[in-house]
Amino acid sequence: MFLLQDGLGVQALTIEKANVTQQLHQMSLEEKIGQMLMVDLNQTVGSGQIGVNDSIIREIEQLQPGGIIFFKENIQSIEQTKRFTTELQHLNRGIPFFLSVDQEGGEIVNRLPFLTEMPGNMALGASGDLGLAKRVASVLGEELDSLGFNMNFAPVVDLNSNPLNPIVGVRSFGENPYLGAKMSAAFMKGLHEEGIVAVAKHFPGHGDVTVDSHKGLPTVSKSIEQLKKNELIPFQFLIDNGLQSIMTAHIAYPNIEKSLYPASLSHAITTNLLREHLGFNGVVITDALNMQAVASSFTAADAAISAVKAGADILLMPSEARTVKQALINAVKTEVISEKRIDLSVLRILNLKAQLIKEHNTNDVIRSEEHLKVEKEAAEKGITIIKRDETLPIRKGEKVAFIDDGSNHQSNKRLTELLVKSGITVTTEEEAERLIYILHHKKDALLNNNLQKGEKSVLVISTTAPYHYEQWDFVQGFISTFSQSRASIQAVSDYLTGELLATGCLPVSIHDSTGKVVETNKQWCK
Image (cartoon, rainbow, N blue to C red; front, side, top):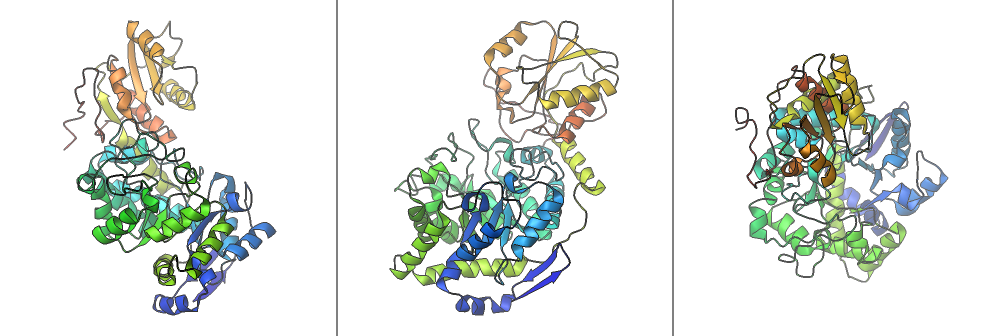
């Protein structure tokens, strides 16, 4: 095992794969358990850590963690982020850290706002373009790599089959398991080719829930046989195509785990189902253990011990990290957990680090011309017409007005600027010939009813999952972008003015007010 340093931002960290077993045997129990911890410095040291300081040095010396996760509070600029990751990596004891982040590729889970702004997974699902999905992930991976990251908690493999899902939505590629499988695999390969560990989430599926696991414990009453016909299909496909890491969900499956333990703490799900049935031999990471789905029912120590016994390799963001580490050490010493069990996890972790850690590309790639072209293509191919307004495109000189619930969202301002630039008059609702409503989430019925009573043409642009169409199918046109990104607003503007042909296909099932399933763009969708 060796460490090479060159200049300010370049750091090649390599574990010789042939020596991994030897290295494992040289490690103390404390060092091995440290490798199983992925910590949030905001949580263990204090909020807003943006660079290495004495407190961080002491914490890392004490915990000896295997990984560190970054959040927005740790990120101020490109140069600051590069400096922070480099300084952190210099603190490792010969075994490189996993430096991880949740950067899914859309604006909902977006820790690094200065990266190239992709429209997100559901827009990619609407495009149906696997090559595009891989290119998007490659752009994301190259930019993350240039900042010093080596692990990304993506892709989101969850199939958003429940319209009431409060947490996944447009983060999903859609509801079709085969589309989700192929899109996820393309995304995974794009990250892998740039040296970024892809962590598929959230096993065995977070798409059919109505509770946010950050706030409580969701329950899904499906059997393994039911999961095999839907949610497990993309996970199995990824495993068969080289998936290296997977995140388990804080969701109870009472027909699989009768104790009502969440999947992340369940031996029946993590070991029996994922490892033995699906054949996954890579690194299993729990979802954040400080989330209420776990923290409301388990102490930090009990949650960690249960997760390890269930088969997890890495414990993400355990509350009271020092207490958790000592509890795991005690659990081994008292034979609650065998050291052989710990060795299995650490061997997987070391093997993955030996395989993927490489010299970082520190070139100035972020928001490069090439990357912006991919951003533009992804936004354009995601535009999906749910109800075609036959009076489009908007004519030059035509008077339009934007209406909303009073939020005056930035997307309205952007689209206003673009339409005015195209020669269209943006005016008051009273003077307008056409009304445009940008829908960011479910709006109240009052606004809906007022529009329905009106006589003017109404065009709705939905920037989120389009399940609310059934409340709006009275309008003359309904367009989905699945995103509020600048590129997506530019793309929908181009469609409205006749500069773009919309080819997206709905990746989820939606209904009209009669309950009939809506089909879109039959000439494009297969």
